[in-house]
Image (cartoon, rainbow, N blue to C red; front, side, top):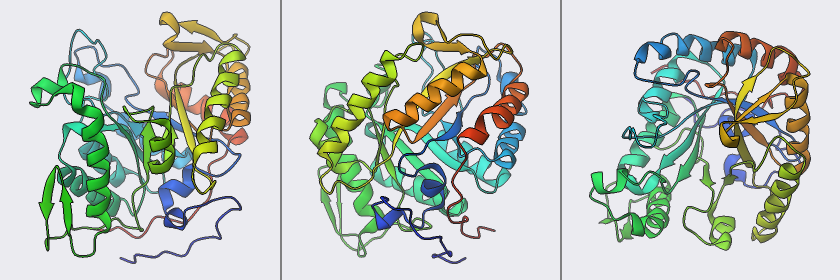
Length: 346
């Protein structure tokens, strides 16, 4: 396996030589352009695991059709009071399974809850997955928002912001420290090293929201930013999102490119002219493809570089929605070519 696959020249405006050769990052992100990914699960879990059967086959289809990425959530425990079971499967285990079923599609977490786990375990899982996939892992990371999880882990939720920042620092040092010398409130080591290392340089970390940090901290430490989109049924939402993205990018110390990503839970109507209509209190957007195309164009103008669409609440079959997105929407927001994944026949 080679550590440095041949890579096209970096597009103008792309900072971070660390990601110039990263297959997952480059497939998803470029300045002033938007790509499309799909959030899993494709069907909402409501007590029967059968709804997830065949999902990997559809993910393989997403790969063949040229979608930029597939996203999985990180929900360690199902809280019936919260309602949403999330992905159900462990994100790293499932993405490793999907890596074996696909060839080029980016593999993204949305988002790994950093304070709940020790950075050694996070780094070991992330580096392993990145190696197994040939450099396709992009990590959205978060501080956590489900109250039941922290006491279950024996952690104080009031300290999750501090622990998040400590975990990010420890995680990155593990990935890059040549001799494993780390002194952190979460642990100390001198000599032992993390193996494997990432396939291509490093694993990108997209901060989700604020993660209990200051705006300046996010600007200084994020390899990218993942936020909720604001309202999606009117023009005011993309306008507010644009202001937020501009304010974040204005704080980035080197003024280099950092990608922004957002997501929407989508019920795509068979009527292409169905207007953008908020459902379930705005949690889900029902629209036809023309309304979706308009929204995506407005997001791109706002500075969004990747849109992760969740179709779990769609009334139509998942395969039918994927086909329409691939044939009618994806050509307007094509995936970037980027470098190929490193050979990974483990």
